[in-house]
Image (cartoon, rainbow, N blue to C red; front, side, top):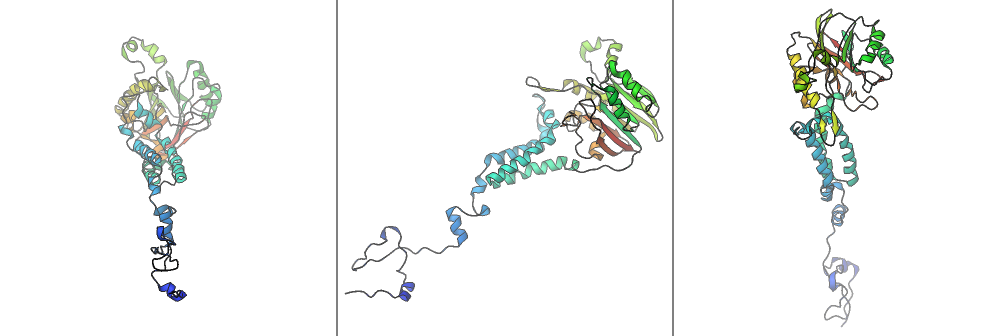
Amino acid sequence: MSRTPPTPETAQDSPSDTRATGAGAGVPAAGTGGTRRVGVRRPILPAALRRARAGDAPFGFRPEPWKRGPVLAALALLIGLLMLLHAEIPNRIWHLGSLVETFLPWFGLFIPVLLVGAVWRRSASAAVALLLPVAVWLNLFGGLLGDKSHPGSDLTVVSHNVGADNPDPAGTARDLAASGAELLALEELTEQVQGIYEKELATAYPYHTVQGTVGLWSRLPLSDTRPVDIETDAGPLGDAKPAEVKMAYNRALRTTVTTDHGPLAVYVAHLGSVRVNPRAGFWTDSRDRGVPALGKAIAAERNERVVLLGDLNGTMDDRAFAGITSQLHSVQDAAGDGFGFSWPATFPVARIDQILVRGVQPKSSWSLPATGSDHLPVAAGISW
């Protein structure tokens, strides 16, 4: 007996009429003479869920982005923790702590590089991990991104390491005199060029003092001038040297500047150099010996108004200067525009030339154009 084929209406309502699946598709039904398609009806899913099952879901609907880029995420966290905990990096091994702190702002350059990598890899975990270094960097250096200077000042001061190998000391002197500063501190003076600076600056600066390799030229009277021992020579060998020999390369001085607002104690210093080499790492012994000696002299200063000018061979982020930064404040941090990097002059990467103050108000801070030295001159305006 033949079966009546279902009409379109009955086929639509019949639960047995489904798409064939599995091994039963197309197998003749028992007891019939024809072929019957059997199987399980597939539920109709929303398009977004079908794409998710197929692995084509948007970024936020699948787990893969959180699994991608684990190395990028780890590097982001490492950079953030390095900046956050820089004070905990030990100095016992190659002075790594001071080395990191010297170039601490530059660690921010890793952030856009890692961000590009996170976008390229479509890594959600790396993108989230980058929030840590961004927050830490902005907390440390975000205040230096804007211009905090204020117009007007009572006194302009300039500090410059003129460079022992400067090929044009006369031109450097004229450039510095053109700055209009009332006080001009010079470091790394040699006997061969000292007379050149004295001659070129005599007209603009009637008062000056040179103590070893540092000097101060002033439009205002100076008094109570003396060298400051920053322990350039230490140990038995240094103690055995005559005073006149030590004085020839003395690297710090103290003097009093007479102003309309009262006396101002001015220190000029050139701390020991630092070196980076494979065997000793970040060698800072000479500089670190001079920091506490200079800090001790400033602590003993009775004048409430103090200005320190000089090449300190270090940034104020370096823990080695805690004894000085606890007494004096950087004019660049308080009233500068940007980071104020001063060395090397061709492509400055660190501010190692400093103007620090106490008892006066920083109004502005800036760098002057390059001279024949490998340092940029730095300037500041201060008020009472």
